[in-house]
Image (tube, rainbow, N blue to C red; front, top):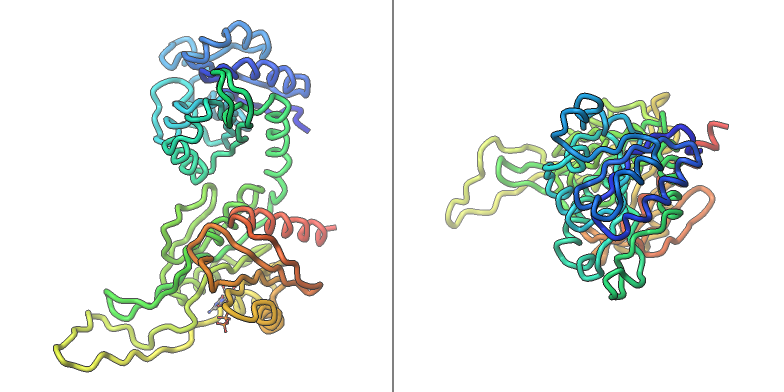
Length: 401
Ligand code: CTP
């Protein structure tokens, strides 16, 4: 499965660098072409000669070496790979990646690459749990960097804790998993709606809801990671645009339905947006002034179009799988079942939003389909997204058979 793949391996300065030798050997045994960049600190732990012998290729070390630039510039080096693997990824290198620094060959290649990056961190346990490292990891997550977390165990410094780099065999498996999953939804087009909508009252004020867009954005991200071509149509949120996703930013339900309509046909649609049920009948062009002692203005609301229903009713443009969401505060399952029937979609992902779910990082959902109800445990919204999208991928694959 790995045969013919090309990996750019970046070896930074950590004691775990010795494990990358075993990793290269395993990958080469499976027919992978490995090119290595060795940082200056990395060269304190393994020699260019050992890397060159194992990769069977030149080892790249210096950003400003004219010979290297002539033979293989850092841009080409980073592009002529299917995956970039950083092992070991030190706290320092992770910080540079999170900040976007590029002051040596490794960091410049990481900035220049258009390929996915998998990091295998390795460091002292306190460095791992330090708020700065955790902040950097969160940033790298948001940037779409893949990671194989360090394990708990005895560390080279004599302490014990989390920080020990994954073993070569585990990194090899993570690489194999990446290649297997990155093509699962190849050729599949996905549409995802996310976030709230804003219904303008006047140029200053609007009606909205508490949706953070976390769940919808995580779904778009999960689709892209499986190789789908994704369009995310989102209301205003503070979530960053997911990596590798075409994002259309809209405000109102009217803008969202127009953008969705333009994006059809697609193979699957996830309507995770919390669309305002009502818009403002007449948005005032100028700020409504509060005249002292005057009556508060009466705002007339009108129903917004149902975007999910529009997608379901799109005739021959109807996606093969349409997933709706049901944010409920009571009778969650009964309401979700009724919504599945009423909206005529394929699945409803129901959740109880009476607690802190809206805006929170976790979600406890119930997947309601024609075949019944599945209660999922409380999970991080990204994990909910991964499971949901994997399930959708299986359904599409079954339909294709
Ligand atoms: N939805 C939509 N367009 C709307 C309203 C809802 O596309 N104007 C979609 C949501 O994205 C979600 C599903 O419909 O996937 C259910 O939304 P929800 O707000 O839970 O249900 P409503 O249809 O608004 O019904 P109610 O408010 O009575 O629960």
